[in-house]
Length: 475
Image 1: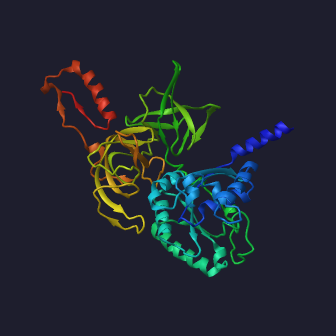
Image 2: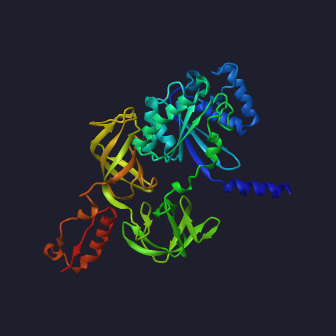
Image 3: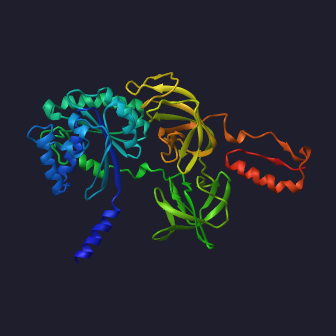
């Protein structure tokens, strides 16, 4: 009976969906305290963690005689000494409803890249503000970064309400000011909570000290916020990661479905060759499936023998991504080394890697005021809009439409450091790859006969893989 119950529990746990969230706010707004309180009050800490928390609170805590919940997150020595968050801290916990991965991100402007890293996979962002100070420069900066990352759900956590006597007017004034900011940025889903992270008001349970607040507790909201509609299920994108050939009878294409749904028997097109076939089978470790969807990892076999390799993409023929070498993108500079415009970078986009150059800087954004101004290059943590050209065609969607195929990283070819992360806006008009053709070659005039055609056509296919559209005229 016990074994059956354990198996039932494991099966139930496996079926829970996962909510990835980040917290952001100013230095002393209480991000780490809020998450620590969330873990503590939801009874998700082990006994040894509780004992260590009580011991550390007395030794290095900043909450007087009380437990310092921030120590659950701030593990670095410098963080504990200064009472701030420096690096992204991840915490995992689950309730009866859902699993959670929380990224506690730093509030300082100098750690912007850490926040971008923590928020790159998040479904939801909790923006904390101090009830005494309201919406400040850091609040605006973090909200801009959240909108840049395409995070659809925002929680405004008005913390330290106990220090303003849980005044409803203070809360409403902060909410009105913040919603005027999110309206400008085009963020639609904003939910606001009056909290006291230190005392636990409205964190896990509704507080009696806010009788005027009619909403739910923060944890209740996090357990029930719908995120299944956030994924792009309309555009099938399957970047090929590996060609599996265990024996003569099997040839499959392995990868993770970036977006959309694929079914057995679907007609698919391979890019860039544009060859079409049908899905013969969808294979997983557990067996074959009739359909698969993002973000599943599967192996697809096709009815026809098509030459496909790593970095290419399978899509539905009636729903193609952008195919181009030139595009506009928002770029966040992540490297200690300043941008060198003369350098060729490696651009990694899904499973595709190619050389890339930064052609033009359209503008740089002041992350504190959101004003745009001219710039010659970017330094660490700076953000702006640039134009990029790649050596071969990449297959992408706008980041707002599809986060999985609209993002990339730039890698320094010398140091191998991540130089920047990018969110693609659109291809550049007038520079589509189809119009970039080599001059027509009249083969007989060059003294080339039919016996050379086969070798030439093979070379042409190799060039087409690099994104060059070439036409051979035989006379």
